[in-house]
Length: 411
Image 1 (cartoon, rainbow, N blue to C red):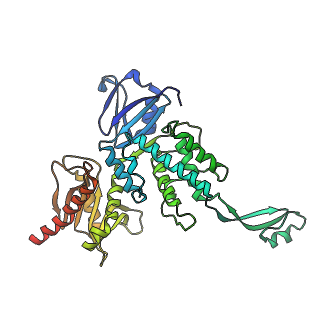
Image 2: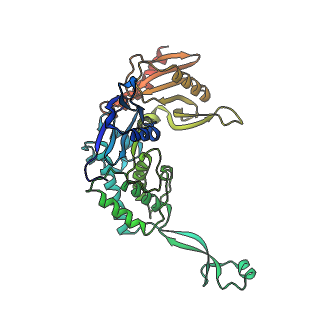
């Protein structure tokens, strides 16, 4: 990192920013376009742009270090406190009750650093207690007997002074700890931690470095893991690791690059937040209505062919398993739903044999939708990201469930 603080260019979601041609070197602008086209729309200086750079964040928030001296900060349209509230639900951090003190963070980078400090501190605490170990099977040629001898190998190679043995080794080099090591390795290279937190992150990494093999880990390995009384505290550690690994950007590598991007896909976050909010309120709201929830259900629509839909959310009758509502989140605020989105919901509803299809938006539309296509009713509803998220969730469910019940009773 440069000793001088880098220049930071701020981009707000979907708001174009114009910069003089001299402000971004051509090579840096090209690298931004090639590596982060999905996150930032890059229009090169031309008569169309008044010979200026035009940069537009495409619904991602976070931090992109272009060079040690020039960074992009992608800011959300939603309040930072609500963005953090969405992250709480999406990464199952709310139940751990340690985020209350983080809501005074002034920026997403600040929040990132504070979470990094929590993760590193808890890794150091676990190191003082002793890292989780397990017995792993190994096969080795040894000058002595350990475990079970491979008799067939001994007979076939009677001249060999070494004996092939199968045994189990008690080691900390297990995936539980490899996830931690890879995550703090990435955090240390993110360029987002200040000199206050970076030494703690490095200490956590060096503590693990002598025990585990450093190898890339995807965020998916943090999901669905089994825990026992010996490693229950790893549940929180892996939840935090999942957050960091999913936000590191479109790619991360084992190279010597000093800085890594930190990027949050707002469309994916909104989808996951709505799903996790509904799951968190399942017992108090959905179950009394006789409903259960399924998220990211894959529907194969043609037997023998790899053609399928991934439906964001399905609310189904508990007793019969029949789908009552199919829902799809749209992190955008058009004047009215697009025809393609309506067609998508008709296809989802037909595939599930469902008569109610819901498009969910983060803000109220100027022209809300409530139509029928054949037997299928298609509506647009709002799970608003402005104001109190809890109240917004209850309002959304009220519009979904109770307005629907009232309409059916009147018909």
